[in-house]
Length: 182
Image (cartoon, rainbow, N blue to C red; front, side, top):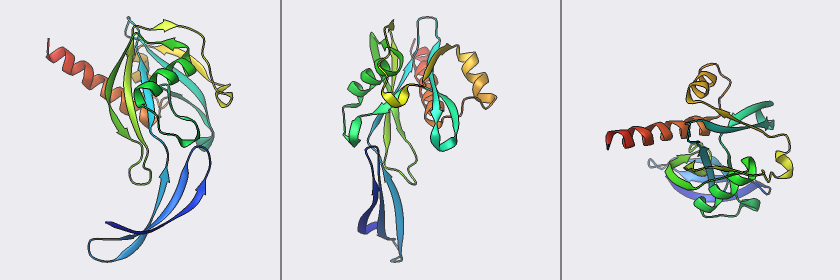
């Protein structure tokens, strides 16, 4: 597929929407709408007991509160080092400081419509501090959950955030690889 044109349709501090003219392999032409958002970091905080730390906040597009792993991007669509972003987001949303951050993998948010890519980290050796939430995160709550509770919430439809569920899969694969190498 070849891009033949592009035009910016909309932009704000968090994203840009563009419409690209395209030419397919067979020569036919069409358009593609793309949401450009900066790279994000998602952190899976796990304590020594194996519990997972989630945050809950109101998500305007779906009109409901959602439990998620802490995650975020740099301000004003800037690109930032994902590892540094992970450290910042963890402290900002939870107040937790990690003794260790282990990369778990990469996620494409919605590659059929968005260029955004996320980097997932496992945070361990945690020390509790005070969250430094942004103004728009003022309604955020946080709590610890066992893996069994996490999975029950997923099965019950209480936990539906796709990035959180994908990150949990990366965590399980990481744990399985470690167990197999012992």
